[in-house]
Length: 304
Image (cartoon, rainbow, N blue to C red; front, side, top):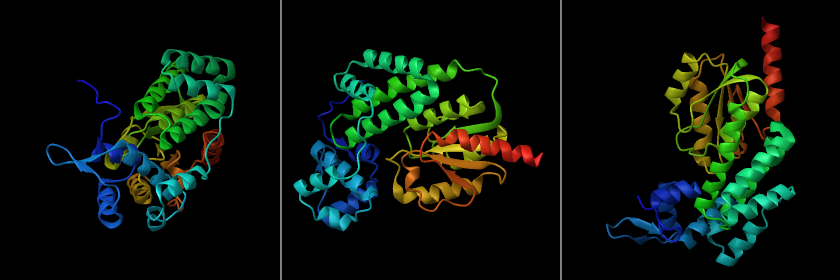
């Protein structure tokens, strides 16, 4: 199958996937605010030019910063870009980040993979995760949100980093210890990079990890927790997960899991979880996983 050109307009499903704005919301904005203004393709379906998709990314970014849609849509294109440029953005933290972004933008994927591998060998897995991989993933995501890289380039980066992490996890001892951690994302969350980084961090601390990959329905995740006798269920939410459905999704999962199984939530999207349900632990970064696992082990040692 021939891949579509990065310059072609996107379908409404593709816009939902790439911006995190739901189809229903796009239609409401179109009626209420007059934007976006899709054209129609040969069979009458909505088709969104890439300049509108780029603007939708900025709108989503400002909404995540707390601005109301009415205020955002009243801005001119220049005001929108100026406001978005003034929001907090991750800055390169090391020479590796600068080099990795350059290699990504020039499509030198083999060289990018080699640099990531060398950083892993040089720094060890924990430092690689916390000082190289996670910040770099944030930088790439920010660059995509600003329209500085294409979707396919973000995917190229993800594939290279996932390959490095899977290789590192595969080289760890296979006999995991307690706790047993079941990892997945919920339906609507297709991004698995954060999940894989969490798996690497847990495995590094000696936990036994069972990954179900992405988009596991709540009922299936609860059934897997029982079948695999999981002690913890860890779910990852990227910044693209719809904020409107986040609270209810976590609440539903918590209710479906057995009482004795802890629920951990991480990723950029989880940071928007303002009022986590009871018995849900939210992680702001990977560095907290080691402490959380130590707390779990201490608590269960005291209970036995």
